[in-house]
Image 1 (tube, one colour):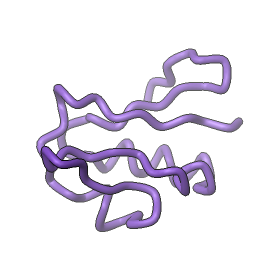
Image 2 (tube, one colour):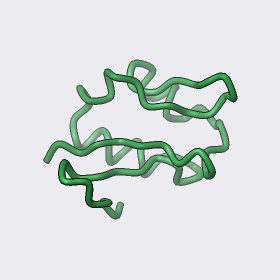
Image 3 (cartoon, rainbow, N blue to C red):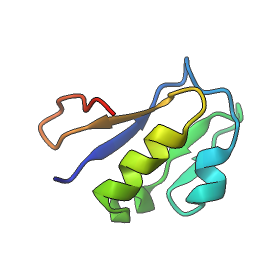
Image 4 (cartoon, rainbow, N blue to C red):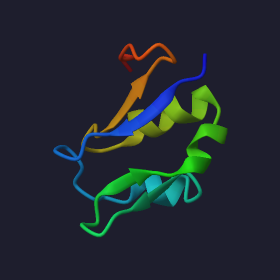
Length: 72
């Protein structure tokens, strides 16, 4: 499916769950908010969905290759 990840900075609470689970795909910016790293594209769609579901604040958003939001 080729899902794309995005972080909603207004929802991120910097729990670090995404970084702990996928340290090559997520990191923190200078404000300690999660960011999607380039290597996130190597995650399977299943792993991307799981990361989004496990985010305690729901800050990880998913989009199709065409830019449509994906409900999880």
